[in-house]
Length: 281
Ligand SMILES: Nc1ncnc2c1ncn2[C@@H]1O[C@H](COP(=O)(O)OP(=O)(O)OP(=O)(O)O)[C@@H](O)[C@H]1O
Image (cartoon, rainbow, N blue to C red; front, side, top):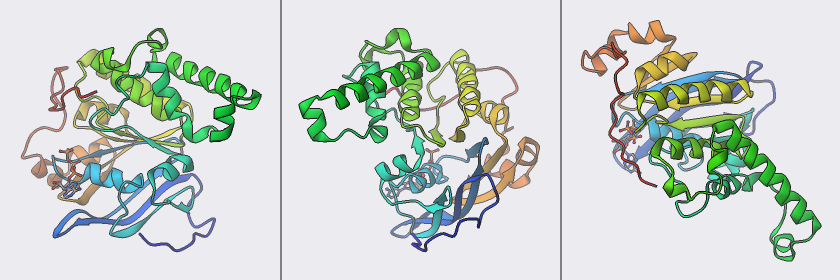
């Protein structure tokens, strides 16, 4: 990753994420090739593409899991640090394609883990359990419970995460990501495995998150979900961004239609979205 220091004011006001020329190679395979993408404050941006197009790899480049072979990612005008926990501290949170909850911890504890990057109490304070630690812990619990209210999981706070139905596990992943108080939330296939009702509820949740001032970048195979939600959508094919724009621009682009082998991009009926992800927590 390029390590040049940034100059304030090089981006239009409101640009939160600015990925430029991001390339990720694994040996001879170029999984992501020279991709530019911006996300502005308050935007919901979609990232679509056929299986193996490089979407998750691109997400990994935005969250410090991978250091891009080439290119630069800036968040709030700062080059992102190449470590996931530092990226979280900088203000980017994410969920994963395959749910990664702590299955044997309670719902509340999972969210408390997500608050870790925002709590300042050190190990010594935690061991001594002094007044500062107890105050911080009470504050964290209050904020975590508020997030469970927000995501509709408050009455499940004491249950083990693994006992939640699949759709609620996905919600819990989102609650845990929100606990780090991000400015940008990356969602990797948030509706995978959901039924149509849960998918509609997930749409409402994404809008509600945006209303809290959090921008969203979402990978999703459910086109109805993407086109209902997103201000702009970028299409990756074989690692390259072939088009980016609003719903009409993307749906009518010949290259996109070809990439999807002529399948219509929006499902004609309110049928169950197809996906191939199994519950895993
Ligand atoms: N760590 C890795 N090492 C080697 N190759 C990888 C690695 N991660 C991903 N790839 C390859 O990079 C390409 C892009 O994969 P990626 O998972 O990013 O695609 P995707 O668009 O997210 O696919 P899907 O929609 O199926 O999740 C694939 O060919 C994949 O096999």
